[in-house]
Image (cartoon, rainbow, N blue to C red; front, side, top):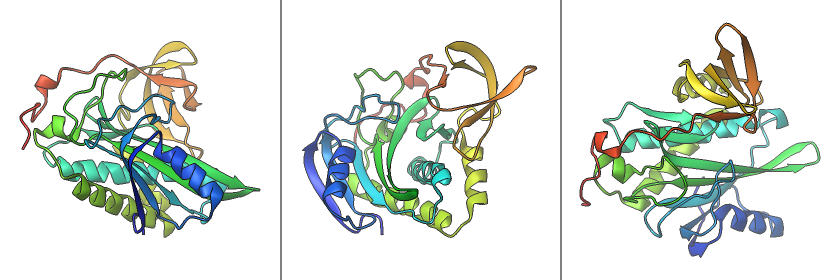
Length: 265
């Protein structure tokens, strides 16, 4: 279903923006996908810029119509997309055991970000109408010069290049598999897998909560997608994306990575 219809662009400001304009003009078939060789103004969920060299990575968006989900259960889309991307990166990098989901939906290899997701939902009255899912996956880019402190690509983590079309096909397959599990109603396994894959889950780590530095442990995610943190000896807090920030210390040097930044081929 996902990717049955594909529109390919050489360049666009944002595949999500392109898709939102498209979906306002007409009814778009579920699973339709827009992919661009270069995205000049891609954004992450936090509004940050997404750096991507032309024809080196995957930047695409697609639409789903999850009418089976209640409005208050929208975060399950974040969960299934994130789990699908984790499944994909693990298949691409079978020798790594440090691939995780940084809440709410970034994909990390170690302490570095390899993929991000931006989901824009459409609401009609009291009904969940559609979801446009934008994904940026760093595949073959060898270096990053933008503002982000911790980007990485599959190439940088493995030392070899990947066929973009093959990676795209596998990505869509993994995401659709997880989405169908949700559609079949198995929320429990999704909840369990998501919590199991969370970056820094149940580890004491530094955060900034409402402008104040704290040490806390991630213990879960509530039904609305808010992060649940335990401050040892004090209290448990539930926070949204605007209230909490992960420690932004730069990750370790790439030279310590398995695979390094070896030659292409």
